[in-house]
Length: 69
Image 1 (cartoon, one colour):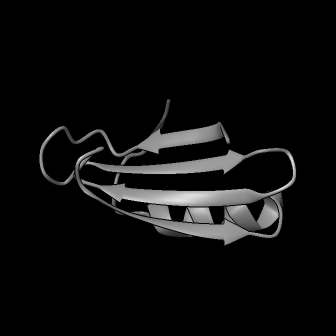
Image 2 (cartoon, rainbow, N blue to C red):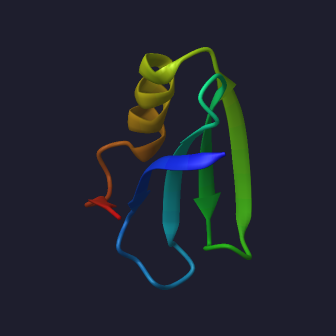
């Protein structure tokens, strides 16, 4: 899977959040991480790019100032 998009909320402490959109060309997935690579994560499969982007937007939400990496 290749990372198409990666957003980070800018927090380096326990509230760090990352959202990834990945694809292998035919399948798409969105991963939300809490607490960095060692923290918790949730992965959701999506039927296409549009639905993956909608889910990623929903999981980011308006609370943080997200940066795309």
